Amino acid sequence: MKILIVDDNVTSRHVLRVQLEAGAHQTHEAQDGEEALALLKRVPVDAVISDLLMPTMDGFRFCIELRKHPRLSPCQAFRFGALGRIQRSLGDP
Image (cartoon, rainbow, N blue to C red; front, side, top):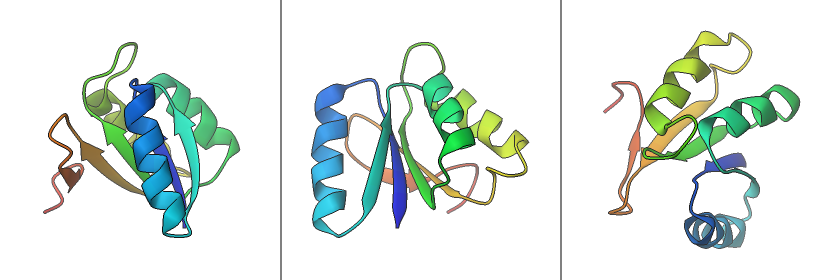
């Protein structure tokens, strides 16, 4: 599975990348929502794991913008915060 990790904290991105790659996933990284949208226009992924609180474009705005793009919206988006808890975005249980 190709997964995009979006977080402004380089250490958090690294830890998540190592865990995902240990599970045989291919990863890409972005430091905020704006960078993530630009990357997604070039590189298709199956899922996105995004922090919520980031500069430039936070995780909330990123998920809203992601759903506006027909080519990008089919990918699954998840969000996580400082507690490390991962949840599906946009009202999914």
